Amino acid sequence: MNRRIRLAGLLALSGTATFALAQTASTGSAQAYPNKPIRIVVPYAAGGPIDMTTRPLAQRLNEAMGNPVVVDNRGGANGIIGTDNVAKSPADGYSLVVASGGAFAIGPHVYARLPFDVFKDFTPVSLFVTMPELLAVHPALPVKSVKELVALARARPNQLNFGSSGTGGTPHLAAELLKSAAKIQMVHVPYKGMGPATMDLIAGHLQLVFADLPVLLQQVKGGKLRALAVGTPKRSANLPDVPTMAEAGFPQIEAYNWYALFAPAGTPKPIIARLNAEVGKVMSNPDVKSFTQGQGAEAVSSTPEELAAMHRREYDKWGAVVKAAGVKPE
Image (cartoon, rainbow, N blue to C red; front, side, top):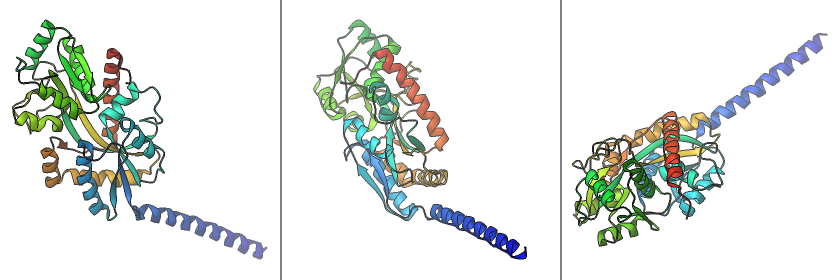
């Protein structure tokens, strides 16, 4: 009998030790994060606004995490290819994607069959940049305010042309929001990017555009374009004399782009918390804030919960605009 009792005791101790070792291994693994390079996928080509504002973040995270943090540009299909790559990556904190308002709040309403679900397949980490959509017109257009533009559009229905980076992008939907709110009719001219659209606006082939502020900032400052309003709730530090859409008489028009980090769904919460904390520190750094402002944007941060709530609001808002405008993919 004593022998049986001793054997049972040994087995119990063995089980306890095994469990303790498993816990230690699991804890050690979490504490070791990161122990290999972290990949931030920018689902667009290098050199654009998303790429330019993500690289300083990656560089600072590299220092903070004590491990390489690399930017992986995977452009194509309006951001779908790169985003899908991260959706299907292991949920271990080593693959992140830069989401934008266009891709995560508008795209799902425009494209009926995406290979991923922006809510089910991703976990929010942190917001890190916001930038206004700037409403600008050709200087020859006889308007100096949004109200004057609306009055002109009402007097000349379907005679004003606005350009965009393509059907279903934030610049397109911002103009559709203005059309709906002001009850005006204008003609949409889609381009393959805001670069060509901006050049045609400067040349006088278009009368107006909405675009991410960094795209138009130098042209406005150089007098080649006239800025009428920004779509953010507060004025831009880069154009402090330009009113918001609310100040211009259209409080229902809020149009801005945002960049945020998302991880594959199921990424452990301690890893999300670590990434979130480090992003917050980076984006509050004075040098990073100054650089980001120089690009026409604002360095910000958020909790994962705040990002999730903002994402849902943006998704619902732009969904209603897409439906009302009858937007279909090109």
